[in-house]
Amino acid sequence: MEAKTCNESRVVRTSRIFPNDVNNHNTLFGGKLMSDVDMVASISATRHSRRECVTASTDSVDFLSPISPQNSVCFESFVTWTGTSSIEVFVKIIAENLISGERKIAATAFLTFVALDENGKPTPVPKIVPETEEEKKLYETGSERAEKRKLHRKNSRELANYFTTMKPWE
Image (cartoon, one colour):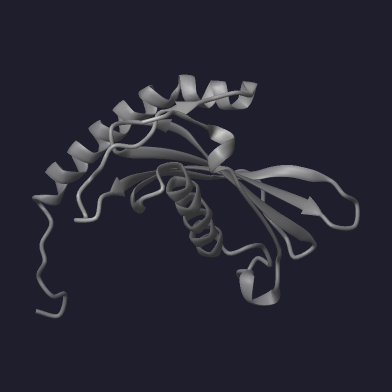
């Protein structure tokens, strides 16, 4: 299986902020941003693997600066690291004031996807080849994030043993 560059999985999507996209603070609703992040990241994962992919985890979404209705919001995603069947995708969210042209990093996110074969089972994915300084930095730190994900998933499974599935009204 031939390795692929980060750029081969790159997705860029820019949109406006409309009144139905904002919360009671008149800034972009976090849930709307998270939904858009998952959507663009899933396209990057699928472009990389050329397989159906499922979201395995949203490792982090860091809201760094509010996004207002005067801004456009640009989502840029690309694959930064791969395991055997897992694909890490980084999403950078850039807010741009459409009048002044000022741009700022408004949020960042890391998500992990798993590529599936025709039977819905995990399947191997191509390795990733970083080219830019930004891609290389994300790639170099990818295995560390993967180890943290494994530990976090293990802890989540152990904690889930204490959760009930009882109906709250019972």
